[in-house]
Image (cartoon, rainbow, N blue to C red; front, side, top):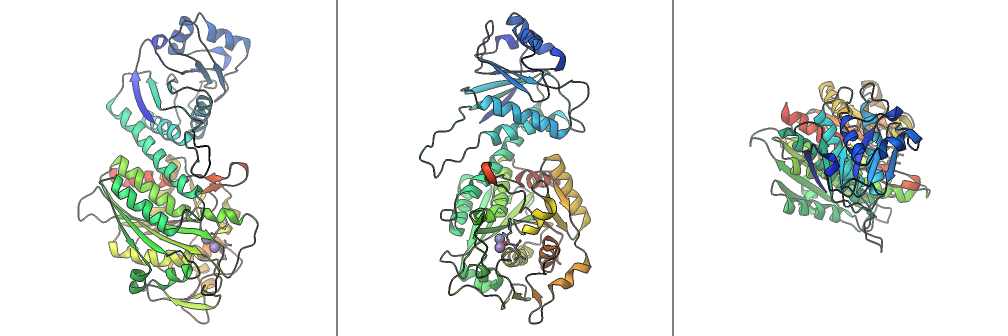
Length: 497
Ligand code: BES
Ligand code: MN
Ligand code: ZN
């Protein structure tokens, strides 16, 4: 998608497939919409007066033709009462409704005039970035395994009509949003692909292709042999029952000084989670193809960063494996030695995410990181606690938690902090190993985070449990691309600090 911003005085003379004009409740038009209205002989104000559209926030009405204008069609969009600034989520709703209405038309380009809307606590760069992000995000369509590959969306170009002279940061803000949209859509595609296509090797190839596509990315993939020599027996225990080789994928973005400590993003990449010998029940088990969404979001974030090119060093580490039952699969009661040297009693083979993550987290320590953030569809318990709205956040350093909360707030991709208190740690005691991989029926998301915390004592670390937020179930089943916006914003904030 091409995004541009321009200042045009004569909106009525603009040639476009779809001119989008904002209108206020009560039939009021802003000064620029008024120009359009005059040129088409008061058609828009007449329609508003008739009550065909009340101009409630985000309400749309399409005029398939508009005499007197150079635009092929006009889309009226409600801006609400225009009395006070919109909330951030109302702004998001407005933009989403706008795009979903344009996408239903056969337009190949559109031009957006929203007058001068304000958002509470945010500036116009934030609005432009969101407009770019949602524009890119809204045109995503899954086709890879469908016979019909034609995209419903014909739109290739979006022009924002600025009410003011265009500043030099305006295009940058749009492009930043577009880059977040690109990364989110890449993550969605990986998430949506079925487990028989998106295997650990497929994820590795995807990362290698990113490194070919972007000169600022470098990729290194470790196979099972190499991981064994590193002592990653916890990670390796998860893929033992699978014919697919487990992979540790390292993707580096170098935008900062050579010696600057990197941010490391660690992703859970279980390309299918059957539960292993602790087999999951059958209902909705297909959704466990999404169990690599942490990995997908980390790779998607790297792509966003490769596009935006901030001055900072970031390394992605993806732990990819398939969790299957078989005669050589890991069994409940088995004990493995992790790369850290700690022994783990695997009491439930369905608690596999933490088993791959602990070794990836130990590996992350090699980079002497400024901070490490892991992202994982880790626990059903997190979905019980927070539903499908907020990502669960844990951290061993409050300042890092605050940074991630703020980034999520700004990116409209929110997280909610959960406790990582000492009192929960003893739930992981084992009679036969240093630690057990499950903590019993209570506080399942917390004990999973406690498990990870045992492997992250050497650096500042946060954990994002995205079990509830990584995908939609039901009729619109599909990956959301979260938390690419949060992670990208987090890195950008660090780069500009
Ligand atoms: N991938 C699942 C977590 C999950 C389940 C995410 C459902 C989204 C929806 C994870 O590997 C898992 O199975 N966790 C277990 C842990 C338990 C055995 C301690 C869970 O949450 O039930
Ligand atoms: Mn599992
Ligand atoms: Zn899992």
